[in-house]
Image (cartoon, rainbow, N blue to C red; front, side):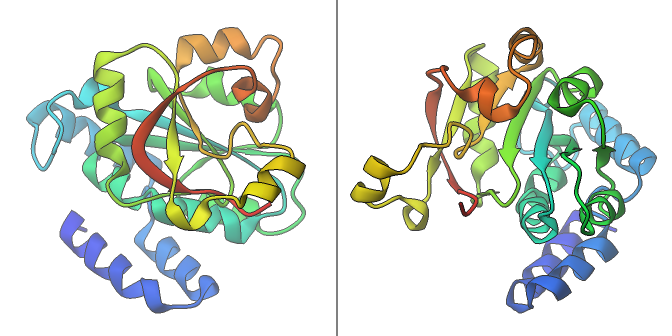
Length: 226
């Protein structure tokens, strides 16, 4: 299935309910089959065909999503990654499950994600193939065009970064004062090497992001609901 067809069908799904949109995503197979997806990315990286970014080899990301009993949130996040997968920026998605009893594993597996039920983020980092990771909360949705800022960042820096909150996701002043800030709410772009070092003492993405002072990128993200 061509990138144009994928984008067209997905655009049509925007007006559907969440449940129907999940079905559309499953039929599209966000990462059709792991081997097909791998071959597609390798072929594009070799030929440069249909790629917007000349530094794609360096920019290919392993996306890591931690979740628990949030099948709909996971589906929304995967939907937002379709564009990055089509462009070849997203190499793989690894879902770290914290003991879900809903259909989270089915959403992940049918979308072609790597599903990790044990070992948490440490296991995900160990399994990741990309030199750069994008850590996301389940339910977070990078906005259209997010890949450009991320690719530009990883091409010229080794420091961690985060996305900027989309206007509709900005937290009111009093909420910011009285509610604890989630360090991973805007995602975290980080090298696999640095993530590996941090994971020795930080066993979740939230713990890993806490204490860092990542650069803020222009790319926007709709954060996951509390």
